[in-house]
Length: 315
Image (spheres, rainbow, N blue to C red):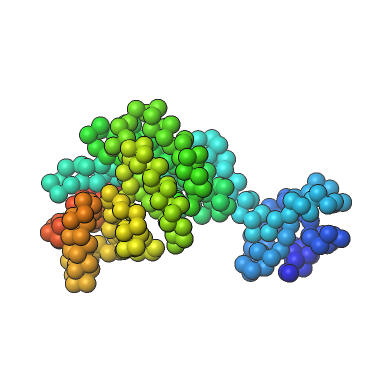
């Protein structure tokens, strides 16, 4: 196993191995040299190197029992600012309109934002990158759902509210989703207005677990959308097994579709199959009138993109 013992002398503070077979060092040492350590070790080395936070330089067996892979320690340090932001409840949402075939606002997608100490806006990509540990990612996802419900309360009561969630952050639907349900009840939002979008960056390995999450949402009266269809891991199998009420066509599929016969045929057939099965389709990435007219002519139900409205604060 690769040991941090070989790297620490490079950064100026060597700590030896212990008789228990692990390397022990103060977390402050890693925090001080985090960038240098990450640059000098490969991902396998970061996974195989073991470390633990200690108060003194005379570790014992109890310290070894708390040892973690170095990559987990680095990820925890990297996410400390995000944990602090979540503890301060500094998440809020912008809303982007989703319109129907007649140009009426059907709903809004709630897009999370963070507020830095200086008042500046923190965008999702930075927060998601910092949420490198499962616990912090779950905390971010839960806080984003609650913030979306809170912001959605101010939207017109005749429109729907689309909220993203990460299935991988929900290990127990009854327990993990209760804060979201409580927020919806507190906001007195009609459950029929809430649509939760399945956002998944990893391949779904346990459909039964995901089905139990969706069943719990539907038990509360909410609907479900399958996000980013046409890219990544959200595919035909996911549609068949989960039977969502909405399918969101990814902008990669929609963009330039008026000039792409393959994209056009795919959208046409998907919209047709969805309509026959009572599923509404949403075309993302509508950047101009030509694309809007084109996908509307193919039978798509709803539309979203900068041409129709940019994300904006909820008044």
